[in-house]
Image (cartoon, rainbow, N blue to C red; front, side, top):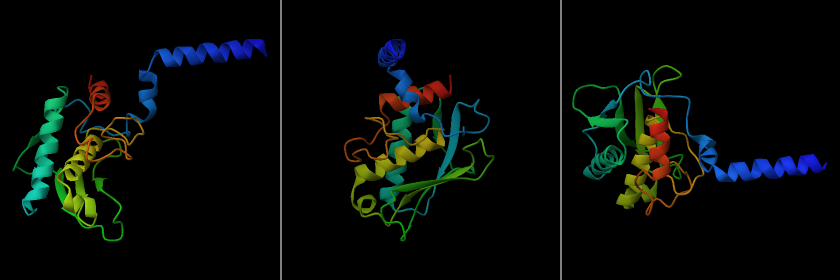
Length: 178
C-alpha cells in the first residue's frame, strides 16, 4: 500500500511538472487538411454573405495567419472546395457554428463551415462572429474541441474576450504540422 501511495505521488508530481501533458486532452480531431503535409489551406468565402459575416471570416483567417507559421489560410476566388459561409440552423439556436467534412475520413479538406445566423449572439456581436469563425478554422486545421483555458477551441470560452487563437491553440497546431 505504501508503494502505491508513493508511486501515485511521484506520477502526480511528474504530470504537474509537464503542463503540456494536460494539453494533449483534445489536441487532434483525427483529421488534417489534405495529406497533412501541406503549408497552406485554400478557402473560399461565400460571396453571397452579408458584409458582417465576410468580415468575421476575413478577420479569423488573418488572426490564424498572423498567429503561427506552420500552416496558413489563403482566401481565393478559385474553387478550393473549402467554403466559409453562414447559414440558419433555426432548430439549433444555441449552436454558434458548424463544420462539415466532405472528404476522406482522415482529412479536413474539403470542408464547409458555417456561422449560425439563428444564434442571436452571432447576429449581434462582431466579436462572437470572429471568435466562432476562428474556432471553426481551428477544426479545419485538425484541432478538436477542448476545455483548456484560454483556448479558441474551448467551447465554453467567453466569445467576446477570446476571439483569436491563443498560445495553446498555436502550440497545438504547430505540434500537428511539425
